[in-house]
Image (cartoon, rainbow, N blue to C red):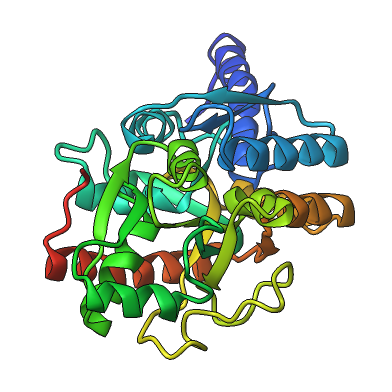
Length: 329
């Protein structure tokens, strides 16, 4: 078959037009034609707390290191579910990230009719972790968590504990009671701030919450640390034994922060993100700031390690939720 010149020229034009589109598609798949403009970093909580400063510090350092523009977009509501849904439904092109808190993985258990599914988000990295802490007002007679447990056993349901609803602190506290045979009066809060304010005011006897939220009050002497929840003592509280050290049956438990993208984001983009996020998180000034603000220990895990961690955490805590019939409120 022969083509004359009139038939041949249109084919050349079509091939010429198709080639750049094919190249662009291949470049995107390989991560070389990315990012295209500012990266939207969804934070599913309001400014304040811990997640917002983690996102801002990390995104700013990524921008400094790479020249990529990053824009923080706070989308609070429904214990993080609103922002997570926005991120899950975004195009999987690497232009939308989500930086969130550990309560994210509890949403399927606590939020009816969740507007997204776990499978719609891909975990890029667990940025870091920090233990929870148990604290009381200095006018309470407790010096250790065992003192509070002993009192709770003597007066079932009378020792009050302030807890953020639908949180890791709530699940750990529920587990500790059942596993160690004591009963507290659990008082639920919608935010971490009011939880701390009420223990500061002596409204509640103790609280279990993030170490970062309590640390300023430990330093000032306005609260007394009774225990931390990790598998080793917190570097900032070397004289405070862990829950396990004090003889209670427990799980090592941490607050943690993670980065997600919409499922289907090309793996080369995810891999480049992982490299740059790790570099940013491990930069000495950022790591030091995280340690000072929230006692964060940098983890900077791979996507595979993050997926395995999330799966094990959900299996553990979903069982605690079921065994204790825990509701979000």
